[in-house]
Length: 188
Image (cartoon, rainbow, N blue to C red; front, side, top):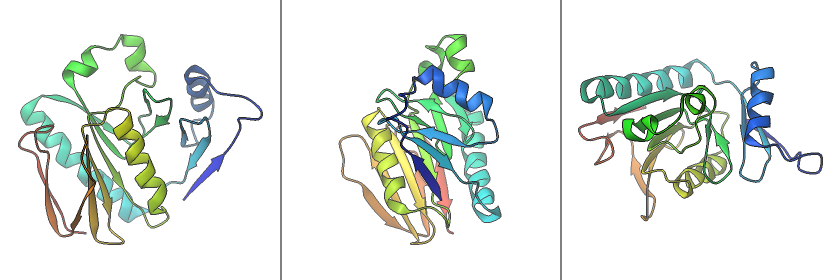
């Protein structure tokens, strides 16, 4: 469950101000929409946390074998090119893109869109905001994204300049040309 606060009538937070707000309130899981709305994210339960950890583990194992990029957890916020500040459940950035950042950019909220993200719908999540978030990633330069929806036993695959592909679980997902050789079995 998320709560959206429209603070635009009071202030428009810059990326730096949003960063400071998060640093000063570490117990709050926050995101910022491209329109400047604050989004308060609820923590997930044990089942969702377990699934998320397994997905991160699958990606880390693949990445250690290929050494093609950097894997990030849901605690990482990215300042997207379109103005939003988002924290996907799982994210991956190519080494080339990561190495193009300064140390200060790496230490704060990286100013980039991951090349690959996974959003895992928890029981308290509404589907439409997650789908909108995936489209926001695409508009910011995402190459490949998976929206895993255990409640409907479906996975939505997001790719640049293509229609969203919907697959039924169980399914083996491919990292395609973004994450070559990655295959993840989704059977929740």
